Image (cartoon, rainbow, N blue to C red):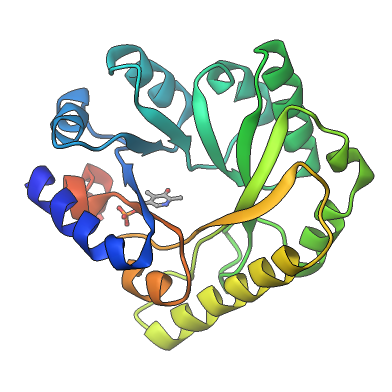
Amino acid sequence: MTTEALQTFWSELKPYNAKLVAVSKTKPVSDLMEAYSAGNRIFGENKVQELVSKAEEMPKDVEWHMIGHLQRNKVKYIAPLVSLIHAVDSVRLLKEIDKQAEKNNRVIDCLLQVHIAKEEAKFGFDAQELKLVVNDPEVAKMKHVRILGLMGMATFTEDNEQIRAEFKELKTLFDELKGGQLPENIVMKELSMGMSGDYTIALEEGSTMVRIGSSIFGLRSCQIDA
Ligand SMILES: *Cc1c(COP(=O)(O)O)cnc(C)c1O
């Protein structure tokens, strides 16, 4: 099932030139290996410990994406091996990533999470905060982080027009920043939006990277219990 689902996604994404992040959280390494054998190299995890232990078991050419909320005290564990951190939601976190990346002699790519959902619970900057971050001289000085774009999650709703409006809002912000003056370590290149339930809308609205879990690996046990 995983292999066929991946192939379907790759052909669906091709016309959009978008990347697929296979979200493997809670799934056993055997499931990830099946996806790897099918040719998938980008895996998304939302827990630091799970990402680190899977990275130890999986082949070294996997690109690990941290897609979940990240606590500052845990950055050090993923700093040696993470390819992209999707959900940066504070300058303090960015500072810690810069520090740990320097210790590991590398530059870590990050996305800034933007709060587009109408729900209270989701993390991220609002439009105004986002502009402060990209204009923050402290951020411009960080030599070991590179901000590659934005990430957002739409409201969990059946209302497709609401989802579309939220993705449009994120794309507009992305384009505004892209068209403006940015420091050297900020490049508006990737727009991470879209999950199993809303990725079609996200692609239509300009996503460059979709994060798909259940449509590849099946429902997670927490989703089945719910
Ligand atoms: C779990 C998760 C996904 C994937 O969700 P599915 O609905 O299973 O595709 C995408 N993005 C984030 C941030 C997640 O935590």
